[in-house]
Length: 160
View (cartoon, rainbow, N blue to C red):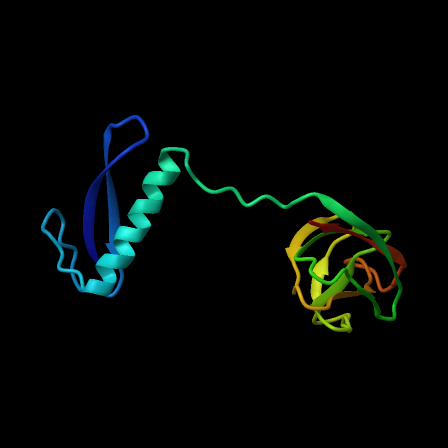
């Protein structure tokens, strides 16, 4: 690996040095300059420019959005699916009553009790969904250390 650095300005006009390890290089160049390919240099310059924005407090913020539609999906030992609003891109989900597994996609989904994504009892997750015909399915599973599968509901909040 090789090491290279670049001096940048922070938000207050002061200097700081950003150091970057370059994978795939055979030696550590220490304070010696590193020859970068045009592609490596463009990538490094882009990263360092974003780093300067972060340090200066000019980082873009990706907000979740406002709650728009609330849904409840009854969850049992058989998979259940619900269609979300077309164009919805994000949802917040919470497992109530039991741990479960879920599947998200375009069109009707089938959750598998062994291989689909896991959400624990009372856990909340915020996730992206496909914009075109978004659907979510869930299936109840037994809690750790138990063989009894309960029932519950998946609280779904669409975020606009």
